[in-house]
Length: 448
Image (tube, rainbow, N blue to C red; front, side):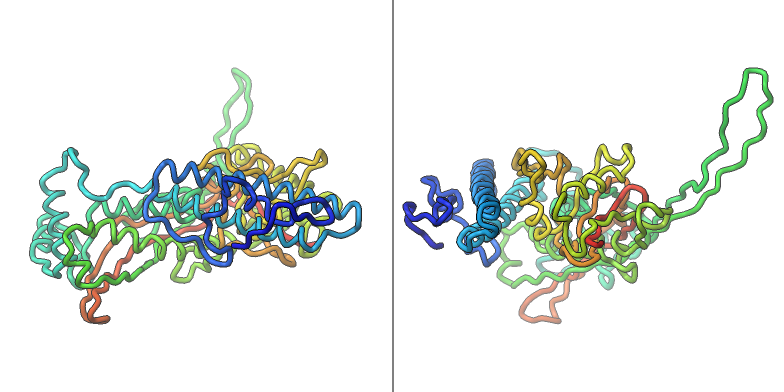
């Protein structure tokens, strides 16, 4: 961290030191270097979340002050001072770092307990299965687990294909994924027991009309139906454990497995739900055909162009965002949100409306999202950067527009041989995804 005397100022009168670093409370003083990723906290308390949320607001206030100074310099001198631009970049990085820390703390605080709750009633078979599964995880002895699978008449789950994890472990993995995977958190979700989920929909709808009280009612034609299919593809992770970890009785192996596979599954899902090509993975919403909104038809996503190749219009950048918002029907717009990556969000932080108000606003609470023109913003790293013809911003009701399909069951196969002296746990789940309503999502492309 670089500390500068508060008395030093640049030509614009703004303190040359980072305003955030000069405050008495030093809200960003405990951040790691901005070039790295914030360290993951070992625990999350309400005080930690509240303190980090206060730090985020302090950083944003400083960001606004420095950006206002930059705009004043451009108006008075035609260009911004280099020191002001440097401070703005450091504050922008500090905002991202604090946001990541806040997201991590909020996620940890929201994690459900996977072990047996103290004082909670559990059925005998559930306790028996949990004990048998833990024995298999720690020692590899699967006799008791195999007997339980036989008694429950489970098929397709054995020592060669892996055993199904206990229900609370599966629920914990899915709950953590819904917090860590940005698109899963905002999309619709279905759990199925088959390999493919089929959803029928009407192309034309039933014939209707107005008639008088005594007028004959002609026979109506039947609706024309089509079908959307969402195959569930296999997603895997392979965490490794040492013998010391497995011998430690204090370690909750259910929680350990869920935590280890959380990041791996979330990263793979996040990429597939956005850019997946449908080959051994879900179909991402950016992989479907795109057409101009004026020529939109079912089976494609409508796009709005910024009017400027590779950027926003210099004269009225907010107008393009308004065009994007109101290209969506009112029924979808009520629950709509923006989806973009952090670099695009960083560019939007600098935009103002005609009255000088910032279009981007920080979240109102620790577990809320930032807003853009009063609509929430979801940050997804796999969205493209602002570039020529890139669909860098998506807007829509993703709960209705995109569907995530989970096949029930998460399997684990214990492998003590491939990476001795470590034990690998080959963990698999089946997940699919695709656009289910092509009218519910619109894209902003940076093209003329």
